[in-house]
Image (cartoon, rainbow, N blue to C red; front, side):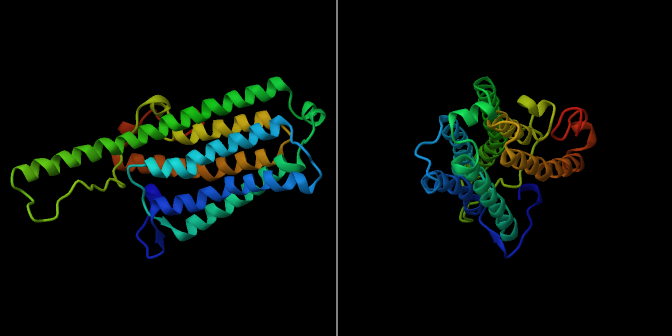
Length: 259
């Protein structure tokens, strides 16, 4: 994907593949929240279960539906990458959805032992800080491509106005899916993958709210870190090769002071 995408007959259009591999997770969770309680004789789930399910759905409505729709461009995605991501999302939706719908705390007394109201509120606050940061830094990356797209469109218009390119099919459709710059806003001043760090913050907040013994939340967060950290480290090396070590000097890959 992105910087590492390659030309292949097995590539899928980026936006389509993204929706197909990201949306099943939250749809699976919603299905379980609808069906499992009745199967286990649970008449009404505690408000905490519904809030946590809502946080999960909010994140993935943005990530799976809004994100690909507002991207200026998306690279093709290999079908094997899409299938692996789909598998992760299904397992994630099943484990977190099952825990929230029936197999985790499903009474007020169980929640009192699982996560206090103060801890739950702190977790939600951390989640929303991470969500806002995630969107902000995603938007910074989108703006880099929008700026380049506008620049290319102006160049096309100028060339057409001067009589250049007539009859050659010039249009305002500009491909920028391989255009990269070093982002600088917000946490990008310190790390190259601030959007990764923001997402980890989200799911740390989810874990805090769900309680320290919520195994599905731990598994999800640990899997995210172990999947994304190598990409960030590889991405930093790519940035250094493309833009030079001097321009990357002082920036971490994703964790300030660590990596």
